[in-house]
Amino acid sequence: MPTMSEKILARASGKETVEAGDIIIANIDIAMTHDLTGPLSVESFEKIGAETVWDSSKIVIPFDHQVPADSIDSANNHILMRKFVKKHNIKHFYDVNAGVCHQILPEKGHVLPGEVIVGADSHTCTHGVLGAFATGIGSTDMAMVFAEGNLWFKVPETNRFNITGDLKENVYAKDVILHIIGKMGADGSTYKACEFAGETVADMSVSDRMVLCNMAIEMGGKTGLVEPDEKTVEYVEKRSSKPYKIFKTDLDSPSLNIIDIDVSNLEPQIACPHNVDNVRPVSEVDREIDQVFLGSCTNGRLSDLRDAAKILKGNKIADSTRMLVIPASKEVYLKALDEGLLKIFVESGALVSAPCCGPCLGGHTGIIGPGEVSLSTSNRNFKGRQGSSDGEVYLSSAAVAAASAIEGRIVAPE
Image 1 (cartoon, helix red, strand yellow):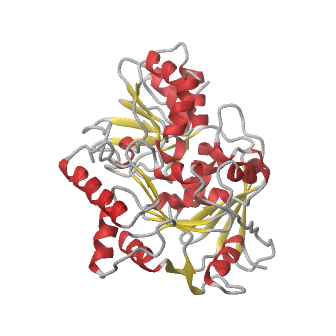
Image 2: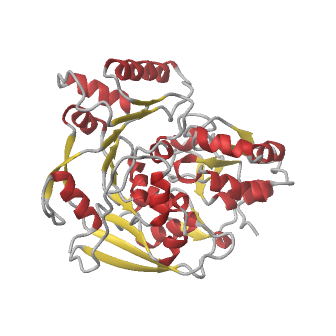
């Protein structure tokens, strides 16, 4: 009667079964760190006296947070990480032109169902979209993974969100997850595995499901997962020829809590400053905006760019507002280029940048100044998240972001 997480962690720890609350040592299938969290991992790895990594083919290092380097410090971080990659013959290194880590890993076939994925980034939970147990860890924990290839875990209980109902026009996966976070609260799933299931999820593309898993951490989740189906298999097998095993949750599991969510009447949602769980329907939010950011590991995929371009085509961004568009990866960028989406953005008055995290972390391209208001398709709106601590960040779907850029204030797409 185990859950999906319990089955995956049992496999990874070499046990027949594990239960919620058990402390286990699990073998890691893929370990990821990037240019921002990587240097501390490397320094800690060297401090403990480790001479070689446990498996150079199971470490993935993308540069995405401060790329290209925007300061001497970030340039030094890049140099340090490139030396580490060369010294240890890391097989999967993606330099400054590849894109956001949580987009790259599934795109490049590094994530398979049934695996345990750890990343020195809290939104590593994104990769549970393919039926893996994926979670963020600290940089010093990552040093031990580099050295030993395993890590201890407390097996989590599971909140399974049974999502039903047909989404209205202009309502998307981002609205669904914001609604759930608003309902659950920032600590409503603390250290729980958050499964997303039901007819609404079954109808979603893998790309849209990524949005749900990506933001599981924003309600305290240890990971976000979707049970693999035909769409998952098609996505995975286009990108990898490696064997994998699919696990699914037994609905009679004693550690499973099922939460029903009906989204039939859901309207576009907005997370208001300064917490992700401060969620309101767009009809209740009236705020002028200085900047719109379309991108990030949450909503920088091709489907998001298409949704925004459909609205922006033939329109102009308000004179009072600037818009920054950052595709989540080079693959997304090239496809958007081929489809003419980037031309639509530029003609509407937006600035299109190379794939990276952009202003999401508040440390690179497009940060906001004191008193400015940002509407962002990213995942966090904490005070100071995108620049000045005297600014405000609102979160929305790509469609709301595009419509609001045209109006210069937060509005619904219609």
